[in-house]
Length: 385
Image 1 (cartoon, rainbow, N blue to C red):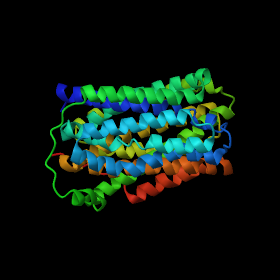
Image 2 (image 1 turned 45 degrees about the horizontal axis):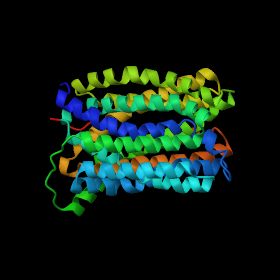
Image 3 (image 1 turned 30 degrees about the vertical axis):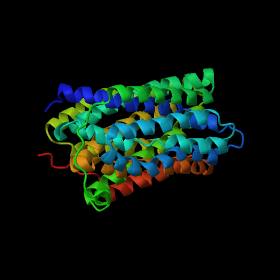
């Protein structure tokens, strides 16, 4: 079944709001490690902490924000989160050393609206088109990803790294305006037993699989994006040229994943993409580790990583919103995004120290985590009837 025009409009609006915020993050992500190492007092370990502390701040607030959105409404909580993100971004721009940047990133990360966005998309769409919905969202976010990864290295080289944080603040305030004017109306579900609804998701086995998957996806993403640009720099690539690399490795995902997910969802066969995604991710890190730091190895690993990652980004939130009712969706998404950002923070803060010991250790750690994930259990497709 296809997505209706009403659903399409709502999905595009919500995705645009989130993408404006994420565009700012994507602008700094591809160059963060190569610029923050030059801050006064910085080393690889502290650079990694600055990289990951944003996600730690996000993780700690995902559950409270998601739960609050069940009670007070999605729009109100999104506006609060965007305001905190915007103010935090400006404070980051004013940081004069690595320690100040770390503290500023905590403030920036306090605008934890990821869970609220997932819940909103679940509220506004039917369950049997969710994978397509989140694939559209992934494409819109992926467009921001590409723009950010292309523009970030260029703007950092031309305007300075701190200028990117000012731009993040501006994008956040634009997202506030768009939210205030265009956020779709959501009929609020009746709320009872707030505390009980908040903690019931800890004990659901199938949701636990999704939380584990969310953790692993973000853990591998931050590991990958700390070491990947450094590998290209070690080959002699200028930081200004990193955007060309990201464009090449992102393009196959943009062209392949949505048609495949749409095909699989229409036939109610979304379990196979989870296995395909896992195999592709495993291959990407295995090839990265064993192939050596060579141009074509890095291209192949990067393309494979994004194919696997994009598959899971389409499937996981669809599975989550299909498994929980609307009145509890914010809280459930809060636990999901808590796991997401906890993985990102752990990956981001560990990778600097691990890479400092040996550049291969982060890759070995990710491979171990991916193999362990198979034994824990990949997510299972819920019954959508």
